[in-house]
Length: 478
Ligand code: PLP
Image (cartoon, rainbow, N blue to C red):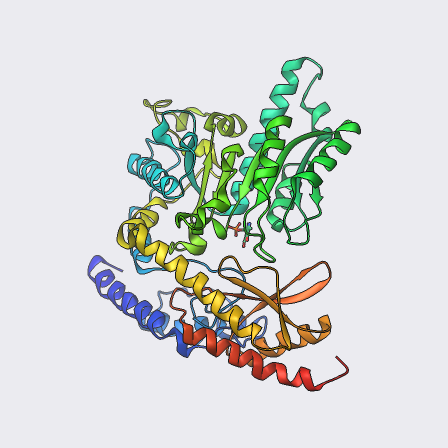
């Protein structure tokens, strides 16, 4: 493909993408294919001679689209949202064209410097404490990770190194090998599975604290567990609190957990992967109170802030503690300005990194803070609209409190009846939902996901759910 052909085909692809997103309502949100479907449609080896563009292009509809789950369909209500916007898409085209691997300042200065600026912009939008921002002139700052899972792992490994260094300095231990088996981290039993995984990868014990009736980790339960573990000779070093849990969007009580972590010299990381975007709205910002006790904080603009995957924003109070955990410095990566400005390769696991700040920059500028706030508020309004519809039907009940764009609900009665309803909904295919469970109670999650979702879409979804639920209402055995 030469530059002239690229201009032509690129424009054709932009038209295809615009048509796809504009008409996405016409597609069934959840695909009907069976595992292995694509193998049946493609040859078992790559072409020896170049294929023709038209053949490749027509295979998008023939091969790919039948197996796509359309996350940006207004009838998609599963998981949590994933961001998508034209500003982010065009910025990603530019990022791909520049194609730099911005591991150090010298490897592409704009890549590092734009990231520092937009992470400060975003931090200010969330009203983060000054010590998380570069502009404070201290050791804090923000970095774009690929995912919240990576952010939690980076936080845990940094906390682990911090604690090991502190203990070695006391002279009570000969080496790290004596300390590692005693280290223990904490999260709630409602935390995302990536937190448990961080413990597995970091080779430390992870204790799950039972959440309260609202799905929140409480300071008192955490305190009891810490005291018990200390009496057994274990060394608590890390707590991951969640703001907006995956099963039901519950909020851990950071204002209780934070002071406890401070007293015990435990690193508190806050995972607000989904709900974090809402804190740009002053009315939701109080849910982040207690952030001042955190050593690190993370949320995913690629979930609810119109930025396409991948863009996970992480701030740390002391970037030196992160570098200490990852710093290796071979000659071929060194440069003359080292030490004057961050080399982001010390802030995350991989060496290579994409120019992800471009899409965040385009989105922040082209929507403005007000545009992004309006999108959050619209989704929360739609969630409450769905909640009100559920409440009009005495056969259903709401589970927990609706605070963000997620509604947890179920048919009154057995779990079986709800499992069958969910199966019927997803087989029907007009809308797509996923389930969750809390203390043995199975329920359905309705998330407002696509930015194009309207009040009519919410009413449509409710109509489908009510219609499909009738069968299970008349079946008294359930
Ligand atoms: N933490 C929470 C609370 C989540 O809800 C999720 C995903 O939904 C994650 C972490 C994992 O996010 P990621 O895919 O960015 O690792």
